[in-house]
Structure formats: structure tokens, C-alpha cells
Length: 276
Image (cartoon, rainbow, N blue to C red; front, top):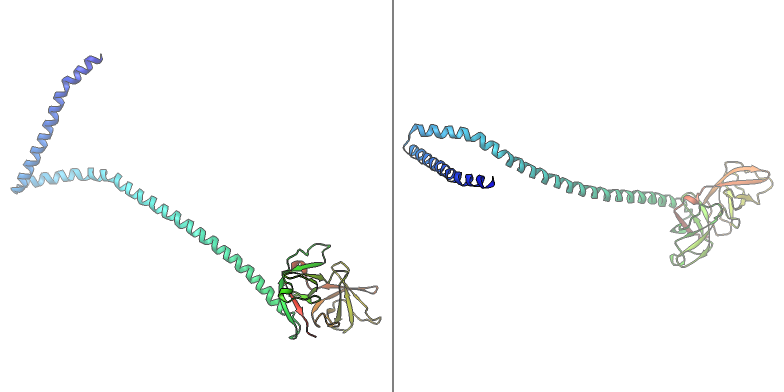
């Protein structure tokens, strides 16, 4: 069966070749005739050429559509690639702007804290050094704090330490680049104070709680709840007039004071060198 099919193919091959050659010859003859008729100005040639153009134009339009589509697709992919690159660039810029925004907000908070800190410097005779709290003072048993300034910054022992709300404590030990501050709540803290309204002097004594007490008040004391307490300046360590706290209770001779300064929330402090 395979041999017969192969022989038939060999028999038909010369006939197909003849038809192909005949078709090419006819097209060449037709093209030459059409060219000669056009040169001679024959109207029939122009009409035939017009008819052929009308027939071929839709065919060429259909044939060119895939190429146009491929070109449009290429342009689309290029634009998508450019959009992805632009999106990545904008995301990077947005991340940078968010970082700068965060930094700016932190600087704004610190700047506000430092501006408020200047308000509690009581006297032009006092000089002060700004430092930062570097230890956690939020624990119930923590009554001292470390600051990142020491003798190299000009800080000395027994100098008063304040923040933007009022007195925090005093320096008890000084290193080259650090110092320890005894807080007002510590049981070893004793600060000479005076009441703003009644002008009664006493000692603010720490008791390891959030409410130090007033000691050595006169028997005829008229201190009442709500009265503000400030430093008296006695002893030459603390400048006079630094806000300390407000009286919250007067019971059985015990006068408790709520401190103005919340050390757990403080970031910056001023170490005051009081020249009395």
C-alpha cells in the first residue's frame, strides 16, 4: 500500500509543477499587459487597477491588524513597566517622607519640652545645663535617676535638677559623663520649701511614695488643701521659687504633697547651678 501511494505521488508531481509554472507565467503576462496598457493610457487598465486596489485594500487591512495589535501590545507593556518603576520610586520617596515626618514630630516634642524647661529657671544668677534622663524611673521602688551629663559638662554634686514642670531632685554623685539624681520621693530627700499663700516654711521629706510630706510646720499652721509649694532657697542648694507641688491632704498633722513633676514621663532635665 505504501509503494502504490508513493508511485502515485511521483506520477502527480510533474502535473503540479506544470500548473504552478503556468500560474506564474499567467500572472507575469497579466502584469506586463496591465503595465503596457497603463503606459498607453488605456482606460481599461486604470479601471482594472482600481478594481484590484478595492479588492486588496480590505485584505491588507485585515493582514495589518495583527501587526498593529502587536505594536500596541508592545507599547502597553512598556507603559506598564514604566508605571511599575514610577510606583516603586514613589513608594520609596513616600517611605523617606514618613521617616522625615516622624523625625520632625520627635524634634517638635523635644523642642517644646526644652522651651518649657526654660520657664522653671528661677533666677538670672543661676546657670543651668540640659541633660537627658537615661534610666527607667517608672518602677515603684526606683527613687533615683541617671542623666547623661557629668563633671565634663560642668555638673557638680548637690545641684538642683528640674524639668518643665518643676523640681525633680538633686545631684548626689557625679562621674565624668554621668550623674545620679536623688528624686524628691526618696526617703533620704529633704528640701527646704515654703507655701505660696501662707508663706510658711517647712521641709519636704520624701517617704518612698508619690506623696512626700511637709515636716517642721508650726503648730499654728494654716496650710490648706490646694496650696502650692515652692522652694524657699534656704541652705543655698535649691534656688528659691522653683515649683514643687500642691497640698492634697491635711490629716492628723500629716500634710501630703502631690509633686508637679512626673519623672516617669520626663525626657530632659536642667541641672541648676545656683549662685546665692
